[in-house]
Length: 137
Image 1 (tube, rainbow, N blue to C red):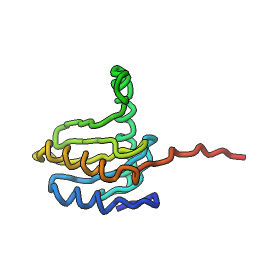
Image 2: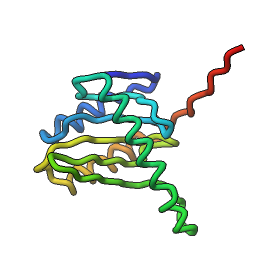
Image 3: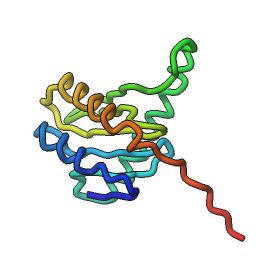
Image 4: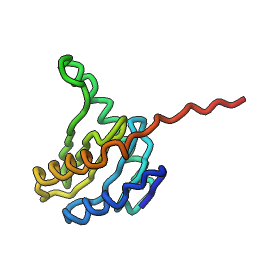
């Protein structure tokens, strides 16, 4: 488990992962690909890679959202299904996303519902500030 911000929500990720046995690991990431907290990853490099994938997926969703100008234009849920499992991503706060990597065989509807519920409950807790650019002086 890793936590990189004062608002520790890893307990909620643990609860989600333990409620559905097919979940491999869960993560909260900022829109710029920074892992905020995670639960269940065996390799710290997986957390970084997964955070980058979550950020990339939300960035890919933006042009789709722009096709619906009357709406808020925010990612609500994205899912990728591959041989062996699934990736689910939901918006969880200001520029913050909840990602779940799960094995095949899970109840996708149940997971989607629990992820949206968790993201709604966390609300402002998961708001993040984008990374500041480092300047050498």
